[in-house]
Image (tube, rainbow, N blue to C red; front, top):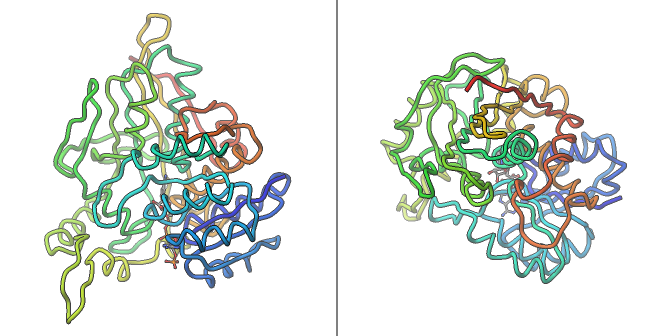
Length: 393
Ligand SMILES: NC(=O)c1ccc[n+]([C@@H]2O[C@H](COP(=O)([O-])OP(=O)(O)OC[C@H]3O[C@@H](n4cnc5c(N)ncnc54)[C@H](OP(=O)(O)O)[C@@H]3O)[C@@H](O)[C@H]2O)c1
C-alpha cells in the first residue's frame, strides 16, 4: 500500500488523481496540491473516495517540504509545469519522497528544454536512496517504453526510430491547445532537431512535413519537431542511428499559429505595456481556452506510437507499436480529453511501479532504462491498450 501526492490540478492532474483512485489496492492515500486549492477541491468533490487537498506554490521548496512532511507521501507525481521540476526534486530529496514527472525542466525565460539539469541530480538521489522517474507521460513516457519493449523482444538493434503523434480530435473551436498553451506553443515554435549518426541536425520550425497514413485514423500531415525523449533515447538505446519526432497539425492550427507568431504574441520575453511588463505568451494563455474545458466538446481519436527499423538475427526488420485513444470515451471515463488522458494514465502507472517497488531503484532514470514489461502490462489494464505490428521492410 502506498501514499501518493499529486502536484498540479490541471487537465493532466485531474486524470492522474482519478486513475490513482481506481487502484485502491495500491494507493491507500491520495493528496492533491496545486496553486489554486479550489481546483483541487472541485476534482475531490467528484471522486468516489476521499482525498486530501492543499494549496502549494510548487516553486517554493520550504513550502513543498512542509506539505510533504504533513501528507507523508511515498511518491510525488508532479504534473504542474516543467518550470517546477527542480524545486519539486529538491523538496523530494529533503522530505525523503520518490519523484515522478511527465516533462523535463525548462527555464521560464528560455525556450530550451533538456535533461542535463535533472540528470545532474543522479548522485544526490542515489546517495539518498531515492528515485526520480523522468518523463512518465505518453511522449515522453509510453513512447520510450514502446522503444525499450521492441528492443527487448523484437530487435537485436534498432537503427531508425520515428515517433509519430497524431491528434485527429476536433473541439470545434477556431484555436486551442490540448495541453498547457504556454508549454505547447513554446514546444511547437522551437527549431526542429533530429538525431543522425551521433549528432543533432537542426531545421527551421515546422519546415519539414509529409503525409502519413495513421492506423485507425487515415492520412494526416505530420511535421518534424524536436521532442525531449529524443535526447534520452539517443543516449540509452544502443545502436540507434536516427531518431525523429513528428506531430500532426491541422491547416487551421498552423494558420493561427503563424499570425500569432508574426504579431509577437508567442514571445516569451517581457515587453512594456501600460507602465508594467507583460510576457506576451503568458497573456495569450489567459485568452485561450483552458485545455481542461475542451473535454466535453472534443470528438475523434489520437494515435501515438513508434515506427522502427532495425535488425533481428541478422535480418532487417520493421515494426510499429502504437495506441489509439478516443476523446469521447476518455471524457466519459474521467471527464478529460484524450491528451490529458494519455498523459495522466502513464503518470499514474509510473507512480505505481515506483511505489510498489517493481521499478524502484535509487537514482534518476528515464523510462527506457527500466524493464518495459510491467509498464506495457499496466497500459493494457488501465485504459491505454496498445498494438504491435510487423511491417514490410
Ligand atoms: N509527456 C507527455 O506526454 C505530456 C503531454 C501533455 C502534457 N504534459 C505535461 O503535463 C503537465 C501538465 O499539463 P496540463 O495540460 O495539465 O497543464 P495545465 O492544465 O495548465 O495544469 C497545470 C497545473 O499546474 C498548476 N501550477 C502552475 N504553476 C504552479 C505552481 N507554481 N505551484 C503549484 N501549482 C502550479 C496550475 O495551477 P492553476 O490552475 O492555479 O494555474 C494548473 O493546475 C505539463 O508539465 C505538461 O508539459 C506532458
